[in-house]
Image (tube, rainbow, N blue to C red; front, top):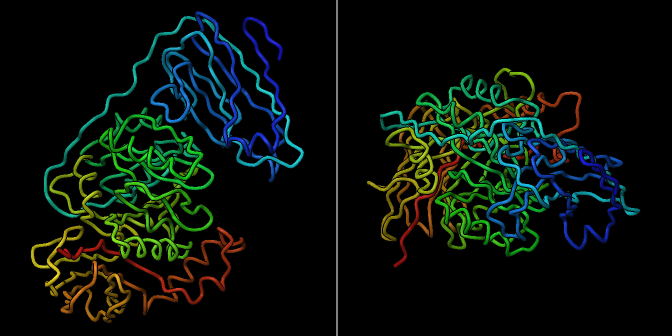
Length: 474
């Protein structure tokens, strides 16, 4: 280590043993009195087998689970950052800079067998700056009950996307969305843009994606940063409880290859059953959701594109924002109404903003609600799926299939049900067209996630999924 008053270098050799001991590695540094800004840069031998994430913690940090002390995370997206009284690199929290011991946190995502030398360069500045306040949480409301459309999972350059919040905002307007949850990885600093721009036209829902090497989850509806440094299977219970204690929701993300959920199942409000295009292993997520429902868990189904906004606005297509779209019944459009409907399961997921409509009811009971075990009368209202197949599914599996003959129709199910009943719309007449559209999006490139054409050629293509209606057994 070498340093001067305004300049500091930290060097360390990271080993496989370090990674095995803890996937997070900490290097302390001293921030001098009077510092109004400091800059950090990381240098290491990047390679396919050497990927090290970057973040920063202030003197308030404690071991997991911390409730304060987080000052930023950029994962592997950046090798440098700054924090100042009035501004910070996207993903990092501006504000008061207390003198004392701060820490660089390195995420040891991939470490080669022979280890890796890392070098951190830190410089300090004491130029006069005014302390800028944190953004205020807004609460815009659009009056009127109805079905509202949104995307519950997307990213900006506050984590690992290239696009600015302004571009994501434009993409949401282009898609005709009513609400949008921005869940950047392990940070909430995207609120600097989205809080002041949330409006009756487009409500922004607070989000953060708790991101680890062995599982991701979204936390919705709170401003607080939640400690993502989970290292044991039962740590998911701690993070979920922290979200609930603050009035937020906890939702497991894309439980499928290559990022399966390997933690214990905590108290979970929602599960992202459909992430990005259907043929990107979402049948695995659906099977795991079906298993959890059959085991007696009542978890609301949601979907999200996981769209990483590029540095330009793309036209509508199969791999952009709101593919899929989550559609919720709201008494009004507001963040609280969106969160309440998500938790209640009062909605469905469809392939895009103009995808099929799918609303399941049983008498006065709506999706996410419960009916008596003696009830055997269920109905769905469907639009935009003529020629497709409607599947009825309960805890025992597939119960019935109906070919849809009208562009808008009501279809019923009048048989005893075990555990729950949910519905799916499966492409039939346009299956070939949808398959060609998906393959065309990767023309000249390898399919993502290790997929092969053989994996998907015979896969049914889901166009819409409803939330379940549950059966009361007592």
